[in-house]
Length: 432
Image (cartoon, rainbow, N blue to C red; front, side):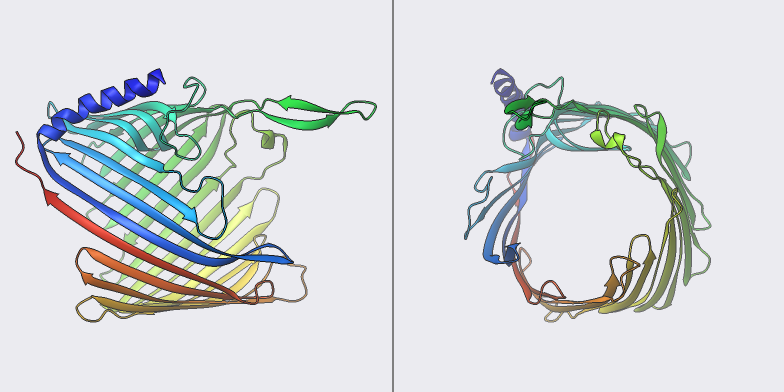
């Protein structure tokens, strides 16, 4: 409680200058309704209608922005755990351009810092140390699993902290080094156990903490010849091994043709103290290449192929060919090998009318597949969606979609989604 009160006081003190100099209030309200049939078992089904209310507000001053994003949801047919509770994903103050060099963010915020991706209740600082050097540091407690409006307990065992340094020696090159550490305390639970003679008793199980300690280096290069390169490598300090390595190349060989290729190495990233570390896990290597050809401004053809090779000797292949036209697209997908066998065709089209105020759309898919290469017969799957987007004014969008799916296991799967979005932007006064 003391930490929560302290955080609220700091937030109010930090927001006061932003309120005095407030210039704009903008945001988005999104109301969604999702109706579907759920099969809890082969003999019991239930109809569900879920509602979601998302909200996003940005309160901006001359050098301050207070950003908020959250969601409420509930089920109208059956009660689910967590329904009716507010989930707060973002709530932070962004204080920009301090001394022409520093940005500071305080509160519940997303983190994107090279190898570090997540969200914290804490602080982040970004420094423009020089025209060729950018620095970033962050730290704070992990969010509660249900994103409630509260701070997590035991900050020393539920936190994420790290940083990133980005170097730009010239306009063509960008190199960054990043690091983060994350600890997560798993709650204990009670379970039934038996002693050596078969007597059953209740035992409290206290799992070990999960922990990550990762670093990465990545580099990108873009030449005036419209050729670009990207490379990255992630290192796990607990496992003492590289968990990911990536190289990719993209080149515009002509005004109409683009070629690309990539290589990716992946090793399963397991947290320290994870029980899955006791099992044998396989690394894999993926090689992919593709071509894009712009025949006309409204007609493009593309194709790409990839091979995934596992250390145990298995492999998978996939390729896609297709075309994009002005108001739609068509493609064919083929996959075979360790990941299963599938052939599928996907088609989509849309057509904006009345200056974009009305846009119907249609999507159709057919696939035939085998989950096991030894399976004698292939299964078929049909799916489709018909939608309508209505934008009566610039600030309001109404979007509805009917989704259908049919295969051996779901003879009649029908779902309906309705979404209403409202954007607003208001000027509140001149900054002081």
